[in-house]
Image (cartoon, rainbow, N blue to C red):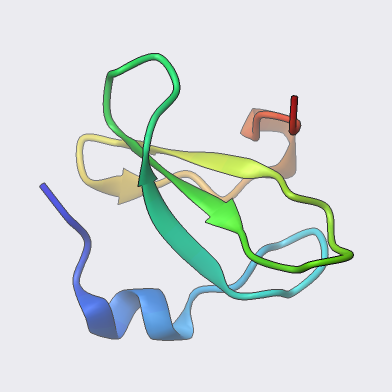
Length: 63
């Protein structure tokens, strides 16, 4: 289930404060929110049961 556009507008990466975009997860499960900063961290935060988990410790590092 996609996140509401209004929610995506106000969410920011907890690590570098850049905007986030919704993408399908690498493992094919729920979606994830990826940091959009060009020179930022590039972290991908999981979305579990429609709830974004914006914890740096839970984020997946870029490959």
